[in-house]
Image: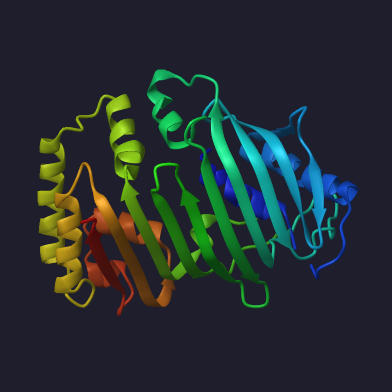
Length: 303
């Protein structure tokens, strides 16, 4: 279960209401419910360390020095500071949670504790004691229309690399405790990546740890494959300028330095995972993707 899972689980576990004065006791109640959900459904155990402190905000809470054990990875993390604000934070019914209608969440100083297995040592470079990560998320859920807006999921790494996601979607089947990703459709999905070592740490290092060839030759072959795909993609989906940007980015691998922005838009909601699966199985673009879907790409190399 990755840090992304931690963010999503916290979001699902911390539900939302009008600003009201909270007490440290309120914060403890909220976190007890959220952490129980994390453990039961995501195999993520969050506990307070001996130095933990909880502080109430007018419409949220701050907790420090939390220990996080991710069972799927067998790894422990320390979060120096967790802050969240929202609505209806006290509207719990034991055994039930609701999706937050609004939530601002921030994790500062997320870092790996201890020595991981050899195949996971690359995680230390992403979020180790010398390179703590920061995660910010802004979420809005519209239960009357089942619309989801992620106004920004941003991860900042110590080397200056960042990854930001913006999403506009629709999940008609989502209910409390029932949020299958297959029901989530997107009509806007924007990714903004600033590379200053991010690719080497997040892609090249895991490849090498798993015995996969990560030589420049491998990435040159991958760039040739991407160029073939962008050449054959319908121009209504991918403009010449966007194809050129994607090809220029792939040619900078495995050590890109610069900013890559991708913006996938569609007049209809569609499930991206299902669309990618269909494309991999040979289904044509005009069948796998709704008519009018487009991908814009901008690559700005660092001078």
